[in-house]
Amino acid sequence: MTDSVGAELLAPLAGSSVLVTGGAGFVGSRLAGALAEVCDVTVLDDLTTGTLAAVPDRAKLVRGDVRDVETVVPLVTEADVVFHQAALADVRTSVRSPVETHTRNAGGTVTVLDAARRTDTRVVLASTAAVYGRPDSLPVRESDPKRPTSPYGVAKLAADEYARTYADLYGLETVVLRYFNVYGADRRDGAPDVVSTFAERARAGEPLVVHGDGSQTRDFVHVDDVVQANVRAATTDDTGRAFNVGTGERTSIRSVAQRVRRATNATSDLVYGEARPGDVDHSCAAIDRARESLGYEPTVGIDAGLRSVVRGSAPADWHAVD
Image (cartoon, rainbow, N blue to C red; front, top):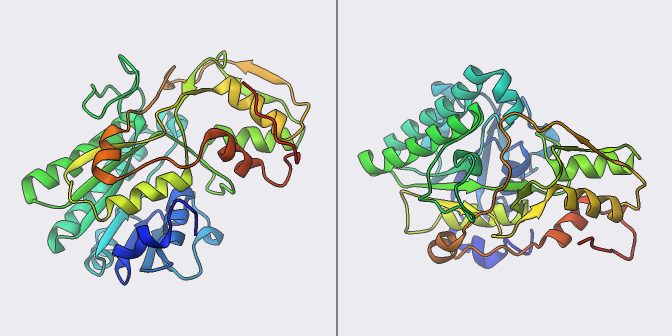
């Protein structure tokens, strides 16, 4: 159990039956592992990107598609809370396959929400900062304009809005969490993560490829803090709303590459390539709403978080790079 998800935080959920869709993925498996300390956990995952090894031993795995009503309805019926993490979470894949992205991310969410409506089961939904697109100002607030720049962002915005609509129209308890750039150690779901990618390439002595000039900034939030936000969202009284999940701090992609290279004592070159379609230049979360309503507070700073990713190959005397 991580320090950010301790026994006191988990206590209100003790004895609950929970369903984690996408529970074999990066965030979903960490969340399922934390919940399994005190809950009866079922994981629904088709293992398209998730891995069997990531599913906690104490969780029950149902292999299936979140879009399949006959699979989803019985699982939601048995749950006290649903953590809906399942998604096709790759901007580049969404650009190549917008229809598949929409059916998985928006269609799958409607399937879960409609099942939950039948039994009035709370749904905590994983959304994304990609719903904002290129923000007019930073930090981004939940009420700011939504102008996604990729099919992934559009589909997640549709899911986000469906959650709000089900809350308004049917009185369903929904909580939407808009994740910023999530990272952490031992990522095995195949989804792109610049921190893990840099660490793997640095260990192998391969060039660190930076898309664009590296001045782009992101709000890197550690997976432990994302799990913390989910657990808090499961018991908040403030439902029917969306909350940013980040740190409120910006770090440039170039800085991350330099820090990882130093941490792994690598000699890898930094190679700059073309910016990727759909990427934004700068992103940073305003987390006031999550602090006030969820009691959320990020606990893992960027340097400690990067150490967790490169642990095992990092030198004993960690040096941060400005």
